[in-house]
Length: 344
Image (cartoon, rainbow, N blue to C red):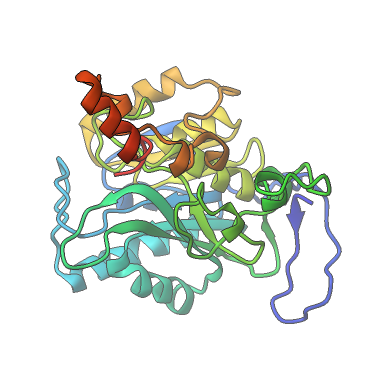
């Protein structure tokens, strides 16, 4: 079922509607597509007509002091929240009545922005996803951070796009137990806490909402090399596949490294981005020129299958030649493990 109507309170089955996006009408506003707009997103969003965007994804600055080339990420809390309310209000305005807004945000302002979106701007929160990643930030005197929050908001709680068959993942029946009864199409992704998922795939179940994708680190082939906050293409692929159809317009007001736009292009969607930094904008355009509709997304589509378990990881002694029989004997006795490459 691709497009559905969801009743928030009735608990009764709701008949599906057409799998195809509705035919455009003369009253649907249009916006520029397949372009990157340079400048402040508030100015650029203000130039767009009402109700023209099918899907918006925003990964704004987190106000944690990150060193951007043209943006000050050290605002006061009140200033940051006021600014956030302004650009989020513009997102709501340009969304179609059945549009979806996905917001990625860190711990510091996740609660405030969720309340702002729902109570002040009138959106409905359909999902609060936890993105679990490896190579998390190493912290002192606290647990190392290895997650971010991703909210799924919709304008209309009863009419929105959610393509279930486009985002199914392998089930524990398939990965762990080799059960022939496993649905070959997989199941919907999870949304709860996990440990290393490749070591505990049975920890996933249908009522969970944590997504596992390795963070794009400096040594990864996927890394653009010029932006420190690059999202994995596979994560954006899940969002875009689930909440839009081919040909729909996908908006990213903070284009950054260009991942949202590149993934939208590869998946056959139209894209529209805003970027404050001229330097970033130039490199985004180069990335888009190299991305073609139908190209595969970077990264593994199934990290649980591609990432080795701890017991199958490389061993330290395998990486350095043994010197003499004593060392070789000691290596056989201790056999210390080295975590797989995606682990810190």
